[in-house]
View 1 (tube, rainbow, N blue to C red):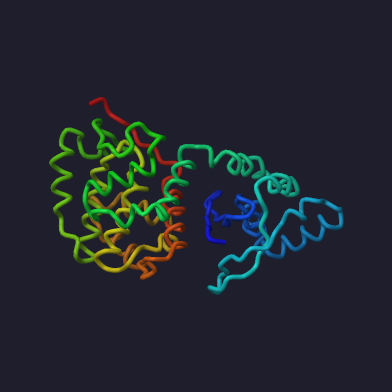
View 2 (cartoon, helix red, strand yellow):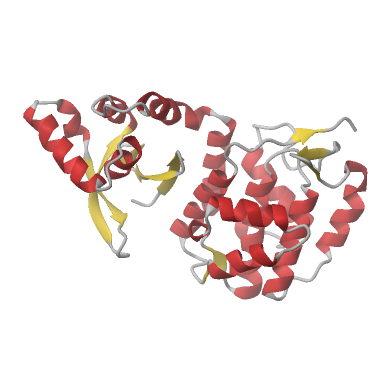
Length: 295
């Protein structure tokens, strides 16, 4: 159970665990019950459905295996999980309008650019790259971006040459990027406030055509790790709270500072914390569009 992943369907968690022996992901069935039913007691729903399927001699249940997942009380408890092939079969047992959308999400997600780059982001932990970074530098951020998006975007690791915008907000004009980035690189990063302010400035600049948030959050954690011996437990920061705070941060960074401070942890060498951070980082970026200019 060395690899744990959190996927998100309709803003609800679906936890998964990697089975080294079988070389595949197993998805938490109680989480699936929670997203595919209106039940307020998904554990009880799964126990009922499991008995029903066994009584009907449905072989899908035999594909379920017990893995340990973190429970609400902070302890790891055995819970049923199922691989993607059997999950497709199991989903037909749910009389719910969300099933087609859920199956599309399940079967297509990992084949997208986001799915492929997420796998590469996971691999950063074992790559050794995080331990050789010139933390806080532009080069460090470019190396992270190049690793995650290499082979997926031809601009991976390269500072953009076009001006981009999101909604009504236009990020730093491309021709000014070299000077602005040099100024950000020299910003102090000793205290919590200084680190947050540097992070906010980098977000306002948005140095890449795509993948800025995912790369910069890893970059931020490396600075926290080096300077404060802390990192962010991103699972403690609500998606909408984070996005609203970041949109506001170019004029008022108090909200993002408050959110980050409340989520700091000393688990800087915890592999699961890093993986969970990647999951949430990608979750934050779902359904977001960045437009490019013509410079």
